[in-house]
Length: 78
Image (cartoon, rainbow, N blue to C red; front, side):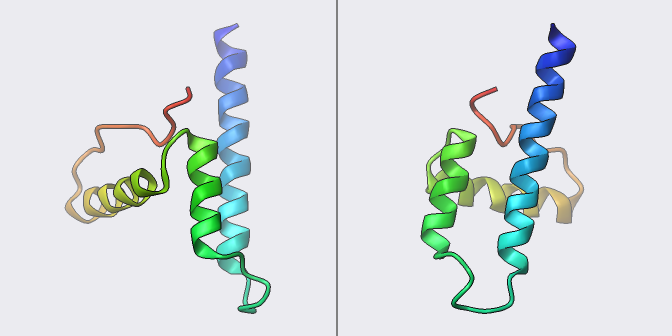
């Protein structure tokens, strides 16, 4: 049962990653979603507010630059 839960979570995060990559990869300005709406959709999918998503993105960038481990997960739902 635990293995199925982790498999489900991995599929959810893979799908969310593909959605983010496809949105950021769109070349035309008209085709690209409004940034605030997109941040809200990502936040809702992760159980966070858009401000918390921006804060987490900043923490991720800092930890990647400094090489320190991140102390929280992206999702508050799982």
